[in-house]
Length: 387
Ligand code: NZQ
Ligand code: ZN
Image (cartoon, rainbow, N blue to C red; front, top):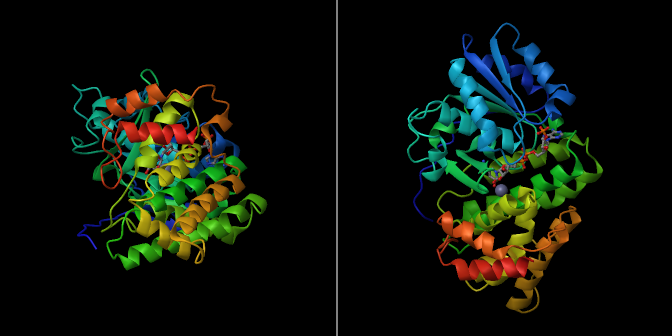
């Protein structure tokens, strides 16, 4: 096992009715900006409920944060936060609202002489403070509620890039599985597949004898395999939703990634596909991952065999057959969740591989994966195989 430092200070308020705890989490004299997305929280009544929970406090609101939140939209909230001297942010929504709010938090405190896009250009390394934030999560998927990452898109240039900063780690997150009942099937599937791939990015690398992390990861994978399809047919099954929600948080809160090598190439290749073609984040992962696993099957040989045996119960046949079986089963799982696994399935006329590779180069993604051995030539092969 490799050395690690793990610090996950987010307070989790999990379960039915936990929105009622919100007021107690917020400083009583705070100037709070509530951020939300395109209106799901208005339609579900959640926003109204939060307003009433926080009645009497100083509240501002900023709605309209879109999926794959954009710098262009978020800068409106940064101006509002600065003008109103907001000192707490409350993100209400999915990963996009949470990520967008992390950007607002860091940008509002950033050197006013600099364009806050600089935060993305420097991957968050120059963030020195941020407005504290909390979250009410409505879509289990990204793990953003308990991590320090955020992904922001700049529409004008077609960039979708991430930053990290401990200053934007949520202080608290309310996780009420009931809030996920209203999710459309597509977003349920997106969430399950995104969380599944987060686990694989930290698990399917090479062995370092990290038994605890491996077995936690396998437990989370098996839970998502069991519960994911059920959520599509029984949207109001609380136990199913609860298990998915907690799995998605634990998939990317640092726990299973501590002390092990990590890949993340599927995500990096996927972000460029969203930026160019507009596919949902999880759709890009479902397209890229099977192609990447085939391309890297030698480097990932030992862990692919472990994955085949412990997650898919594939114990007979040659090693190559078991690995093929595990990759095929993974693809089949995504398809059963309703997510297509070929780029051409998404009505994209041309993969635009040259543009994708150009953006990878621009973003410094020329030596990625757990060995840093996925260069632009390999990425090209993976994109071609994903078509
Ligand atoms: O905008 P509203 O109206 O709220 O609707 C949203 C949106 O259209 C809807 N939705 C959310 N909760 C709902 C609901 N509809 C009905 N009922 C509910 N309870 O779902 C749609 C998608 O929401 P979005 O927040 O975009 O989805 P997700 O949570 O999958 O977030 C995706 C974003 O997170 C980034 C992705 O790149 C993408 O930009 N990621 C963030 C990560 C992180 N911070 O660690 C890691 C991930 O790998 C990922 O890259
Ligand atoms: Zn993801």
